[in-house]
Length: 361
Image (cartoon, rainbow, N blue to C red; front, side, top):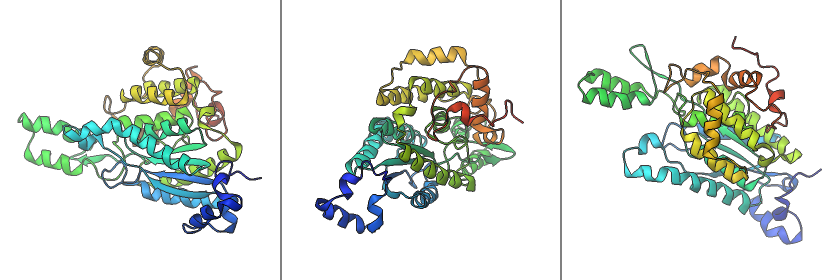
């Protein structure tokens, strides 16, 4: 059976010889025109650590897509980084970039009739942008998170990107030495990956697990670790199966699944930026959701995780303790998740969590 439901428009028939000729120039051969074409929206960029580790993930995903019988086509998407842009005119481009990125993904995927899309992103705005685009286009899609940064260390203290922000205030007020000010700046960001607490990037990545558009357990992995690239390859294989089953984002993104995502955000003490992003995601998916729904969920979901910036621990600590699947299992057992919601794997939330222990081990 052929699964190139959309791309056959540009690859099949006598009249499409010029189209095929151009595709041959980028690696297509005779047998490839019957395969599904999968867009890979590549957020790799050396503009920031959040996105600087994406290319190895994309490479693994591209190889896995080919091995699974698809034809991947990679295209770039831009990024704006709040941590660098804040306090400057550049910050005016931050939220606007979400719409630019969503439009860029939609333009590439729909402009070439692709059969599915894998979005690889790792910063505040390219993450919701990817899911907004997936919901708008409603072609099979999966989100691959770049991964979290590992904590920095200075004199036995774990550091995040907030540490140098706080150091600015302390040093300016005369409460911090030059040595500590310099040491924190030089050690706060020791690797690639997004901000290491439950800031916006990790909030969105974890909520995408609960929403059902990312693989379970993938959202709090450290960007440089081999398991992150393994997860990207697994995501690619899952996407090809979703294309075969014609499992689309709007089959997954529903009012109930958004409730699941917001419940997870509340339980982890997630970023308030999730409010404006999920309002936009819901709108793109045609789901009724208002700002009052966040307050409704806040009132009934307790905070289960002691994570920075409001708490003590880092995303990598949460991952070691069982990660987002563990939090979701606790919420499910408490009747605070809809277990019947579909995920990109074709399993329901309850089925996906079946083997997760009831409590952290």
